[in-house]
Amino acid sequence: MKKFLVPALALLAMNAGALGQQTSQKPPTPAPPGAPAAAAPIPVTPANASAHITLDEAIRLALQHNHALQAVRSTILISQADEITANLRPNPTISWDSQFFPLFHPDQFNSDYLANQAQFDLNIGYLFERGKKRQHRLQAAKAATAVVRSQETDSERQLVFNVAQQFIAVLLAESTLDFAQKDLDSFQQTVSISESRFKAGDMSEGDYLKIKLQLLQFQTDVSAAQLAKVQALAALRQLLGFDSVPDNYACDGDLSYETVHGNVEDLKALALRSRPDLTAAILGVSAARDQESLAEANGKRDLGVSFSYTHTAGQSSGALFFNMELPIFDRNQGNIAHARYAVTQAQEQASESAEQVMTDVTDAFENLKTNGKIIQLYQGGYVDQAKQSRDISEYAYKRGAASLLDFLDAERTYRANQLAYRQALAGYMAAVEQMRQAVGTRNLP
Image 1 (cartoon, rainbow, N blue to C red):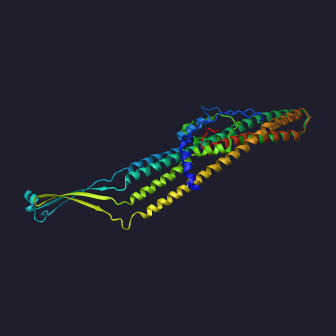
Image 2 (image 1 turned 90 degrees about the horizontal axis):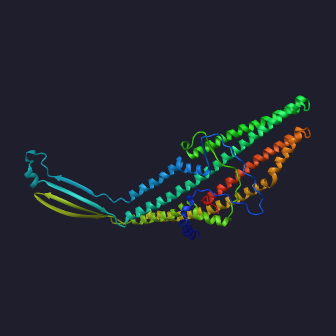
């Protein structure tokens, strides 16, 4: 069954090989009728920096400057150099000799002796390759280059995914820092009001100290968010190339929810046409077959031909010589059998790659659906309800109508809800990027 799968996959891969290299971002898709209204994107306020980059710009910079990718691209040049070597013809050979020189009777060494008694030989030879070895070598080298090109494209796919994931991590860190700073400013006002109430005798010293101690948590949250932002930007900069952006660069973007349409079967079909690693596996079958043809050609014995010119005793003559191995014992049987087994191995690997593509798409699709449901739960009312509960408790506490414990509990619930909502948005955006990676193109249906 697997042997019939490989040719079909090859046809799919060749019809749309360029789709795997597309890196344009999918535009926002309107929500379907009846779905809960999407909440406004959470704004991200980047630090004052001399360079602000979007996700598309980050991907472009990474594809241009990432050193690991540049190293992978050099393998294409190496493989093309191997094509030059494979296409070379054998060099001709030349040999000569001089005989009967009167080394021990130098008095006899004269022009007459050289012309009439010494002997001179000149041989020119060439090896004629049989079985079209050079053509098979070149074809095998070109097939290997095609595999390397697809592997390089797959490295680009992996890099784009990593950049997108890290870019989302930066957006989450910036959004968390922005929220933590605003929450700290708001709570500092609460502390000031509590201090006034304590001085006026409307609050006990114990409750006032609890409020002041709670301020430490907000300050800690800000410090942790600042560290997370610095680390996320540093990790992203490594993917982009440190020289491609300045030290104080920032990311432009929002944590947002954009619905993705399309069913799993359409995504699987698109993945079969677009995934460069699957294309590389299919091309690997062709490369293995070319190696088998080369092994069979190497089993043919080559013909050596040489022409010899001889001058001796005043006479000149010529002779032709031919030589060839007799393929009695060594007919390259081992290498031919090795190449045939390699073809079977490549077919199995291509079938395994096709099944891995199906698994990746299924996992990514289910992950996307689950994260989408979580976002809809938050946007269905939980975000607004947590904020309203906090605002009501704060209003009542400032006017002495609510206890300190009720206010602090509402504050903790609100903070946890907001942080979880931001993480859910980041998780959904990461799930979209996982789907793009699984399909092999950034243009989802």
